[in-house]
Amino acid sequence: EFQGVKQGTGNSQYSGRVTIGTTQSGGSYQMTDSARGGHKTYNLNRGSSGTGTLFTDADDVWGNGTTSDPATAGVDAQYGAQLTWDYYKNVHGRTGIRGDGVGAYSRVHYGSNYVNAFWSDDCFCMTYGDGSGNSKPLTSIDVAAHEMTHGVTSATANLNYAGESGGLNEATSDIFAAAVEFWADNPNDPGDYLVGEKININGNGTPLRYMDKPSKDGRSKDAWYSGLGGIDVHYSSGPANHWFYLASEGSGAKVINGVSYDSPTSDGLPVTGIGRDNAAKIWFKALTGRMQSTTDYAGAREATLWAAGELFGVGSDTYNNVANAWAAINVGS
Ligand code: ASN
Ligand code: ZN
Image 1 (tube, rainbow, N blue to C red):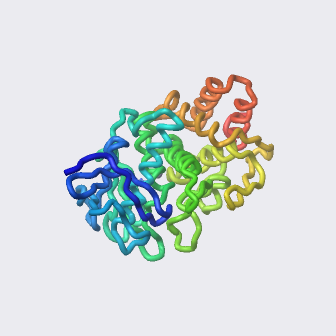
Image 2 (image 1 turned 135 degrees about the vertical axis):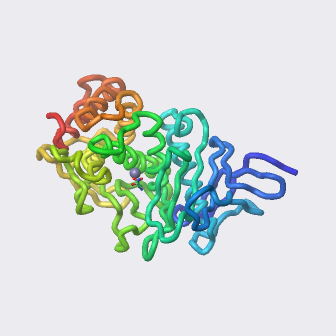
Image 3 (image 1 turned 120 degrees about the horizontal axis):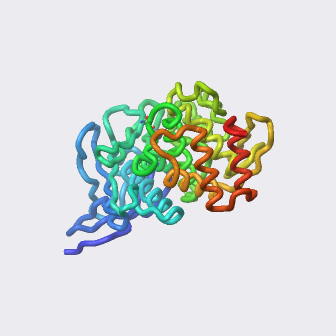
């Protein structure tokens, strides 16, 4: 009998043929990623509690790339968690959601016609619905990275999930969702500043959120205003998502990986981008080194300027461009 760390082949729904971490146990394989803290993916098979059953497979080739095989959603979930783990480890030096090397787990096929995905601190796990009607399983790379990042935020700044801090919590998940997707550079799902563009959640092909101009979704805000803390956290995230786009890419029209963006500024002044890798490093350092549960937009500005000063020097071009991106969403001046 053999036992050990394996690399299975997965036929995913959104990312083509991928390699996923598996474990051999006797004559079969488990969807347990021993190289990443033992992260597992379970099949809830439409249940809504417990863990259902761990995905297992006889030949370590998983899924068929469509919803006709229940293992396909498992492949996407396991792959998304793996990419997010690798991103935090390789880019930010953080091993695991809590930074302690311990894996979480994912559950797919939650409930019936469930059009959402969520992170829970209680189970230290992510859960994905299959969608309903024209919407698809919520297992794309960006959704996985968004949900897993809720775990990172809980373990670090622990931004309260209401008011302005709630918007910053949501934005942190969208920011690292985009960062992971760009970093993964999967040809089937190249990086973009859209959230949920693969899952057809609106039924008309549009994404859930737009970071270059959040108001394109009809509800999110592009800039801070005094009532921002009173709206749903998935809309008060808009200005911070917009900050991340502007800080990364700068204002104006741009095409990246075939997607057109146009990012206006609230003060009408142009912003010069510092590159998304630098913007992500600054946000991560601010999140883990300065933000707290009650941090608001003004506090997030201060936290990122502190981080930019530490990483690039106070008064450096990068520091000044970070400040300009905040001014462009009506925070500070
Ligand atoms: N998918 C949503 C999110 O991660 C679920 C929720 O609203 N808690 O924000
Ligand atoms: Zn969220």
